[in-house]
Image (cartoon, rainbow, N blue to C red; front, side, top):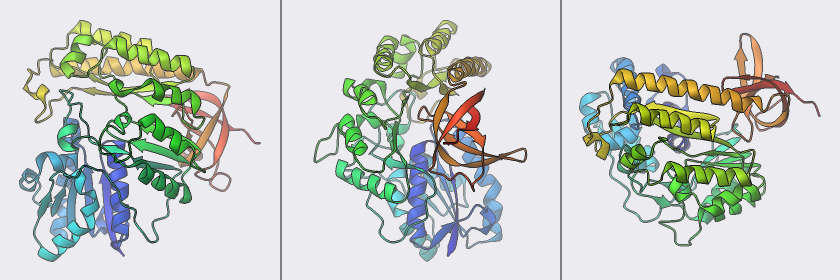
Amino acid sequence: MKQVYMDTLGCQMNVADSDRMELLLFHFGYSRTPHMEDADLILVNTCSIREKAEQKIFSLFGGIKSLKEANPGLVMGLTGCLAQQDGERLLKRIPCLDFILGPDHVEDIPLAVDRVLETKKPLVWNDFDNKKNYSIPPVTGQGRTNSHPSAFVNIIKGCDKFCSFCVVPFTRGREKSREANEIYDEVRAQVEQGAKEIILLGQNVNAYGKRGLKTPVAFHQLLYGIARIPGVKRLRFTTSYPGDVTQEMLAAYADIDILVNHLHLPAQSGNNRVLEAMRRGNTVEEYLALIETLKTRTPDIELSTDIIVGFPGETDREFEDTLRFMEQVEFSSSYMFCYSPRPGTPAAEFQDDVPEPVKKERLQRTIECQNRLTAMRGEKFLGKEVDVLIEGEINRQGTTLMKGRTPHYWQTHFPGTANRFQPGDFVKVRVEKVAGHALKGQAVVQ
């Protein structure tokens, strides 16, 4: 078989898209290699949500163009959100590229490679899919062996919210949901291949069912439907939008045993004026009310979020509001970023008036705040037994440790070897230490 080297940047949707392209390429005669120099095809799946992500991509191609010079038969492709955003302009900036595919052309990856090999000319396919429905056809035949116990399942793509800072509606298009029966079939297939945990994905996952379905199914109904599928041991989803959280969704946390006690709910800011400028569609008070309801129904819930600091016009007082908000909610983890203007977004027209040194200082304070909260949230697990789904093993200073996650999405490490534990095993671990965002302890022998 020929070999493909793949690099993925960005969100879990990109990871799922890369998995899909790897599967399609496998049936096209390519196996994955971890060594770039051995590849017949180099594929980089890109992100454009932050300026820093774009810089990483250009730096990466700057470092690998020598491979193309040494091997003219090597095919290089760029996919994902940057491909959608910049299209043909990327051919001028990265001349070694052979093809550029937007997110709606994931299914066309074999055709794109074949076309390039045949014509020896670069191609750009980044037009949006104009179909009203969203479907991912099954791939027949023997597939790759999947040893990871968690499986991503896309249920919706795109976003209709148009937050002023966000490029997603312009790179991923409008919201479209997959038919529930198609999703159930994929979940069953993933379970047959060894998946124990199903992770539902979407840019706005809890908007599922609002557009593109022949048979209407609400998001909470989809959760109940998947929970009834034999073999699904854990169920989680990401990413949610506060304005689309329903009382039925919150109730599902208490009703569905396999729905994990973790919710990622991006807040972005803890100040109402900033939220309005961001076009988030909710207030701090509304967000807190959702959290209070959820904690009442599911007292041991763990919460994570996204925070942007240095948004245009953000004052010192407004930033302090965000820190107080984080402490009030007690997030166990956060994805924290300095604001950077994104091409074509409304906020790109705002005056980017928060100086870079101030942004960096605010980001550092936000990280320090979250580190305190993480340590505090982790302490409640000390001395207790947690259920860990093993994902694999790691080696730290010559010691082999097993790694996995709890239902609350805490990474957990404990001594062990592959002879004793396998990915997909559930193990009880007694927590002895909290180290950053990880719990450490010992497996409890049953």
